[in-house]
Image 1 (cartoon, rainbow, N blue to C red):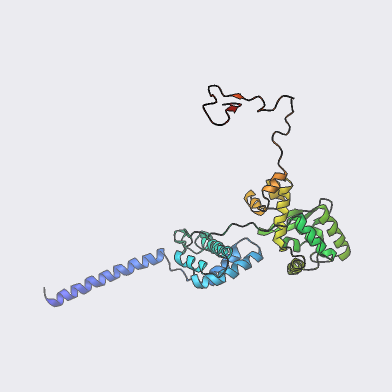
Image 2 (image 1 turned 120 degrees about the vertical axis):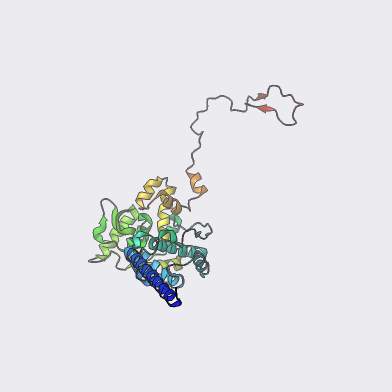
Length: 340
């Protein structure tokens, strides 16, 4: 065989191999079509549009993820997530919030719910990234004493009604801020509200909050919108002024914690507290009632033997006898006992 024929044969074989490879690549492309690239902005907007939560929570997610995703992208390593989280200039609780927000986002992105098949569950970078440790501390909760202090520093009916409703209904700020007159059932002492997750709930009214709210509505005559005449930001501003004037911590959630804690002190069942405050589980009630401590529990303590009648006999210990088989020389201390 001449050199030219060998060269021709090699070219033919090479051409045949090239055709086979092209066919194989075409088949693979048909089975696994190339997916369009996804930007972190597109993924974030889709995530916020799909998750079932209130707008205020979505704004918080957007704020944190707008800081994290330009740095981490959609496919970071576990080490990059930890380094970013730990490099934040905030308290441990803030770093834990970053972690929870990133975990929720990546768990969604790397699941079928996202609609992005290129992000597979087994590649989720947040898997096995440990949560940061947060020092255990008891969150401040309002109680009857602090509410009394706040009332002494209030000089108008509207603010008094807001404080009373916050404490006696256990409602969140958004729920209280959006109360309309048609939401109030004066006879049943209830308020209808839209809670987290866009679900309708009922909130209880105590006698104090009922009377103050009734007086305020009668004075203000709300024609449209909420019964207060101010929005959520207006209530926040009022609470800040009241905190500065009274010296009592006065953000809206301290009243919700106080609501749960006071019910606990009043021996209300945990499941009843959960239903009244529309919490999702008894564990959440436990978190909100951490300020209820040993002294509060001891006030409800009943003497276990308090109902035993005194039969007139000598009390146990008055008729102690020596333990059989033990003499004075056996031990240096008392050998008297009632039983073995």
